[in-house]
Length: 255
Length: 246
Image (tube, rainbow over all chains, first blue to last red; front, side):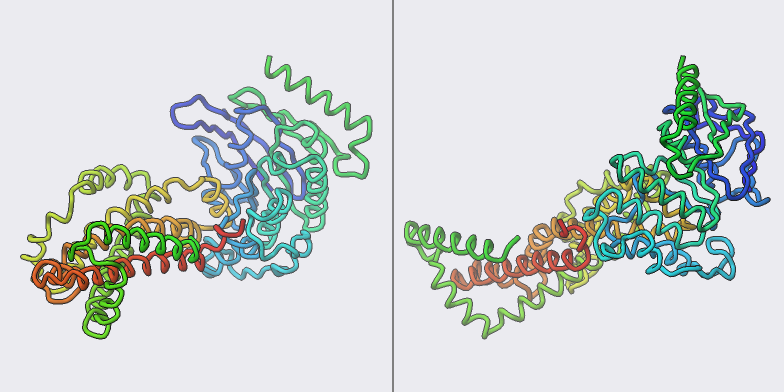
């Protein structure tokens, strides 16, 4: 589904974060991108979202070269990106309103776009129908993140990109939302790419884990984690061993 | 601002006024009750007409300023290159006291309402531009990026982010401008007109030496400003509900 070919990227006047970097992600996979601050993990997500562009090389999604945000990719950010002046319901409707603002032009909105499920369905599915008329400042961090997820899923995406979406939440809310995200991805057959700096989160969510090291990243360091998302996986020895391995690798990178 | 607080403040001012009038004991400072009687009498004469003319001028000046300054402020605040280009020009023009242009504008536009509205427009335009520009430039980039990821281009970003985000700034600019607008209104109505509260106050105070009527005009002008403050507050509660939910 995603094909990154010989990617080189640097912000102006800084050394490159990626140099001749290649990676392939298949449809329906769940990926965690792990790394310490400044390694380029969020930048890679923004490149996949079509909000930044390679200096050399290219990114293809579904065979098409990425030159702008792709209508079927959904991006969820750390601070949720909700409009403070809109209610929860209006925020969930936002993507659909943007699409009707442009009409089916094929550029901002896919031609023949019909949302599979209505806003009410997503409000209910994410458990936020009770706060639909509240503003973001009136609800909890977990509810805000549920609103952001509902807003993205209302557009029937096939790729979900998440940038440290659960980092500001308490442990219980975080685990609930992680599990909800995985079950939604399975239910909607989504490809998931989640960026995190938390080893436990990367190991709990990603069936494949991409570990980024000190920039520039040239080779994709991938860890297979086929049991991620299974019931009680977090209490297994496999999970803890993987967390240890990732921890050591990150320490080696930092050294 | 609660109405009860405004009433209490008005009561306190009336008491201070009464005490001052008793101390001064001269016709130039009549007591509030004399002025109140004249105010009611003058309402039945032509004070209401002067009030309406002033209200029209100040509303037109403010409406024109908002209509012109908001798009410019949004465009400059939303684009770094436009900001770099136009901000120095704004900073050069903003501090010029536009009220000095009253004679020049009257020369160009004549003695009608156009000149008076234009002066008010010149003053308010820059105040609103600066506030709206700062609001638009200070928006968190995540907000814009998350909308871009939903498929929004430049037009949709302006419609769904810049415009609603700038509404509180527009209303703040209006609130800050009311005092200036009313003061400018007085100056523009001193000459080349026979209508408006500025003319009414000046004519009664300086020509007829009818001080109670002059103070009745001052009260009318205060009520004009107060009414505008309340209108902006009302608009803010209606359009920016999210600011009042906590």
